[in-house]
Length: 548
Image (cartoon, rainbow, N blue to C red; front, side, top):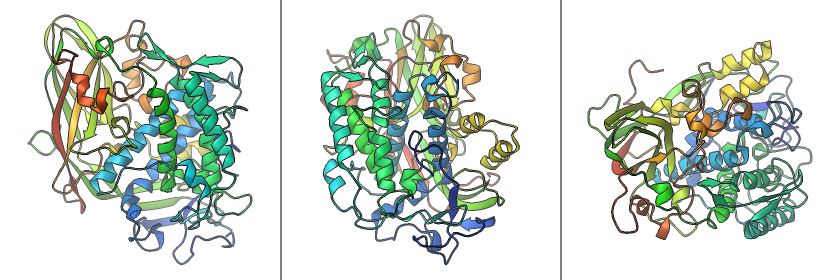
């Protein structure tokens, strides 16, 4: 039995493509073996196509159905939502520093990336799956075209199906919103946690993230996130089975995943909206001035022009949902979004010797945000790292691949699965190695002919007693710490400010560029922004000749 952690344990043995000619519908008899051998799969063509061309959501196929996107989500939940070991065990989710905030931030950033690609393809920003919709038929349906290793298909979500028992979700949402209004939460382990912000630290968001998920089910707040996934996964109406939305290894394939997580993020933003706007104390850095910055593609001389393209890659897996398969391997050739690597170049002038955290964002330019979305839900944090400044000019270069958001795994998923089965790595090591956004998808898609983004950078002061000063940055460069966390026994997250700062809450008047200016109108010199362009090649002619 599958399910999100805390709802029936680890996912089941699913994840094979349905063989051509075997439609993925209930009633398909279990087969004695799963699919093995070599498969050429295009999730947007033929037997593997999950949405018709008439459905505009089909344009996002490469994002939703990339196995490495699902791999990240699967491993994240297996690692940070792990309650399968005793609470004293280092692998338990409670040992992850700020795990509730990491739950909120990581899922938010995935939706930010989803939104950027939607804009590139002429689609509207994702809207929340609102409580009103929970009681109505939802269309269209979705069929993942995946089977379990036994050959039994994941049940598709039928067109016009309704969410079973939505009142539980209504009650959980109402209780969470009341807790936000009361500015305190009653935790399932006992005690009350106050929600708020002081000394430049958000001390409420992690507890709220835990309650919304819910990492530990509460009699008061229910289990909004997990129950929503499970109930959507049961919309097919068959007892004892879950569709892909009910399993972290396949949930990101279903378009409802992003609508559900927009609602989850909206709940967290309701809390963020209760906090005061940032002031000079947080936003300023006297004596530090970003004088120039640009991004440089590895193969194009012109600065501030970056490139994405479609190419074909091969992965070897035990199964597409990353579980052990007793019947052998499956080799998959599939089309994916990729990019030409690039480098950040930044010059920072300092009046004294000091240190700071350089934060880099990409924000879609020239768009008017609808009422249901603010800049926090479209701004992509690209990088964050500690810098040491000497008096005078300091020139930094940083390869895009060093971002702490992308996966740092030196082994393929197939190798990791082999080692897990052989017992040469633990399940915990397996999940750590697989967590992180796919490096190939570092950049949002962009458009043919170019799509304008704002490159936004700021240097923030390092807070007193911030673990950034004691962290082992040499070691951390090999981990995806900013999306996949840090265990408390390994040190804390090396940045005490709110994740996503300063774009974790709505800026004054809704204009993020106001963060760059003081109340008197003078510019904060530790902030910098400029236009860059991302161009997309749909047929892969920008591919490196020797690139794999």
